[in-house]
Amino acid sequence: MSLVRLLTPDGERVEHPGYDLDVTPEETRSLYRDLVIVRRLDQEATSLQRQGELGLWAPLLGQEAAQVGSGRALAAADMVFPTYREHGVAWCRGVDPLNLLRLFRGTTHGGWDPAGHNFHLYTLVIGSQALHAVGYAMGVQRDGGDDAATLAYFGDGATSQGDVNEALVWAGVFNAPIVFFCQNNQWAISAPTERQSRVPLYRRAEGFGIPGVRVDGNDVFACLAVTRKALADARSGRGPTMIEALTYRMGAHTTSDDPTRYRDAAEVDEWRRQDPIERVRAHLVRDGHAGPDFFAEIEAEGDALALDLRERCRALPDPAPEAIYEYVYAEPHRPLAAERAAFAAYLAGFDDDAAGGEAR
Image 1 (cartoon, one colour):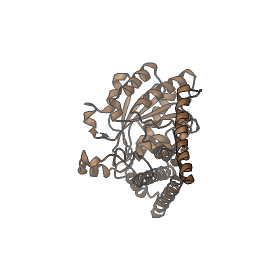
Image 2 (cartoon, rainbow, N blue to C red):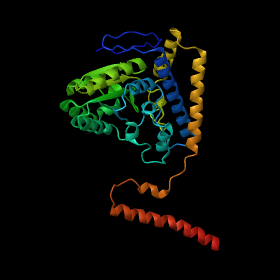
Image 3 (tube, rainbow, N blue to C red):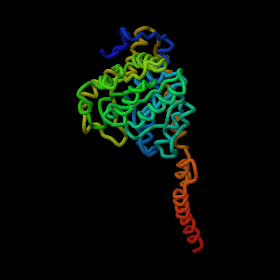
Image 4 (tube, rainbow, N blue to C red):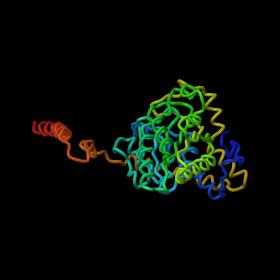
């Protein structure tokens, strides 16, 4: 199968025989808005980390179309299992961006209620969410949930993990209603894709009896159309699909990474010419569906949301030290209770020292 593309880097709409997408000018403007706002919020989070307000951040710069396109394909009843970079999907699912920052600021164990958004908590263990997702999908299947599918995200590096391959085995054998969405951003930290696989990643699905599709991950139209069809197939009992979204991580793997140490600037420049936001902007201009006022309005909205996010992030209260022991076990746990008591006594010792100092 050839690369699925519906919008060229120059903003020209093209057709693909396997994927038809009817998108109105209003819907295109809405997609553009999501792309711009997601990028702006991501940039603000990166700045906050550089200024010491977050312990870490995993930027998504360059991957906005893959996330917004697939995120907008979801139905309300569908369940998402993300990695730690799906900020754009979180936006599409209605998760307050502040809740993402709370996690990276270290003020919460999770950040949001997965059931409230059908968007599971972030997973830092590479690839483990794929198994969780398949288990969830098989549960839906056995409960007769014909109106719901599961969408699992992971990166190109995760395809080398045993958990992802085991998940593909189970999904294929049991015909689970799940879509595997691989964002191939070309680099598993410092390891390029050619060190991960000798064949295109989507072809790996064949070995598990699962159809694989490769989509232009910088084309929001194509990502929307391909994911929408794959989710519909899953809901209707036609089983799983693996999507490889060919995209590029323009920034660092995380804010602790320096990509200039392992990749060439010319490669980055080449991918910059395929920017997912610029191609939608070019399409809107080409077809006369948006002008300078619209683009300025979206930029201003993004800046306002970023400023609001910054202020709310810096106003987050520090949790009580003892909060680390909450929500660990559902039932009373004797060793944990003993550890918590010892920690409380340790903290109380500082109060005693302070009182002694005042007495002196």
